[in-house]
Image 1 (cartoon, rainbow, N blue to C red):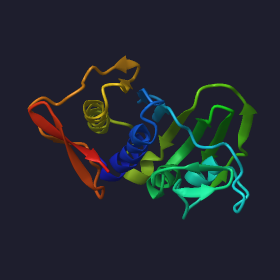
Image 2 (cartoon, rainbow, N blue to C red):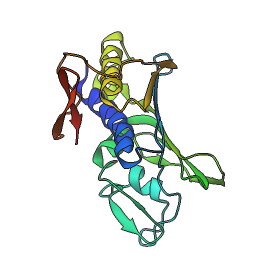
Image 3 (cartoon, rainbow, N blue to C red):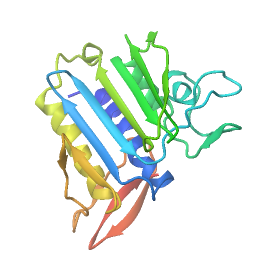
Image 4 (tube, helix red, strand yellow):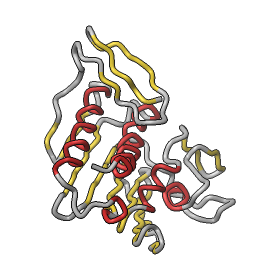
Length: 219
């Protein structure tokens, strides 16, 4: 098991779950797919995507700033658009840095942005931007550089931890949001009498009552 690999997985999935706070009306789906043969992980959420516009100061598309440039996050205000919240900071970039391949796809309802990275973020592909009326979403797909974690495959131990984390997210999100793992809908909408923390290390927690128990939510 690798705590570091678990951490970057956790950053990506928590970023996706946090979008429900930003867009409680528009977000109703979170999907996680883990392909052990390909060594890849994909996390998708619908609802408010990143604005597909070029930042006036930095002269690059906003999604590239968020996922491919250090010392930036999505907590800023630009004349072309504002992304609320303080998410997608170092954690998402570290997932990129520690991946053989990392792909960002996002739609703001007007344009779809796609960008591929390779070799621990050393190779950055040109952004692909097309006009589209597709509903807003964000999908991150990455192939962790397992050698950097002292691993040769996504083994059963780490996958079990990933799966548990997805179940935790499913049990601590709004009933309106459906969570899927490898194409299967997880019908877990409360933890009953079990007290469970879904917070990742270093994040503040808040408790919310769910029936007789309470669940920790990341703030």
